[in-house]
Image 1 (cartoon, rainbow, N blue to C red):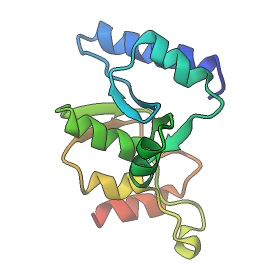
Image 2 (cartoon, rainbow, N blue to C red):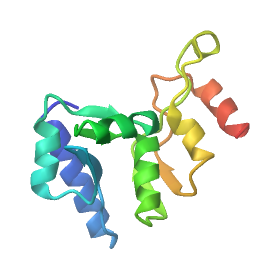
Image 3 (cartoon, helix red, strand yellow):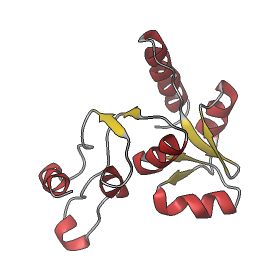
Image 4 (cartoon, one colour):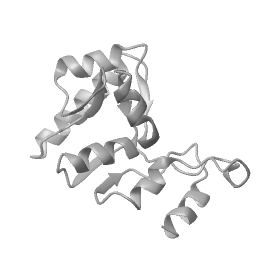
Length: 142
């Protein structure tokens, strides 16, 4: 989402989590350091950044070593949350098999991470722009 919608959405979600009696711990990478539980200023920094990257499992070493900043994908969030001792997290949608994925082999790291990292992920489902049928087929085979 573009700024300022990304920031207002993040703050709304955190408020809902608090209202339900849980503790929100939004995860991001700021200047090469993984942060679990972003402050309001840190959320604002990421939301406004023109240089923030999308950080998946494969990107973590690079982003951290170069001192870069970014928001984590589901796979990146799973890794950081697990290392922080968080047993469950919520996300809007998970990645999946992209359309024409049977030819391009474009499959989100989110799917393989679900079978690799012992953490529960609560999600609205697979992002609708993806091939939902092939994504479900992939998940069944994990």
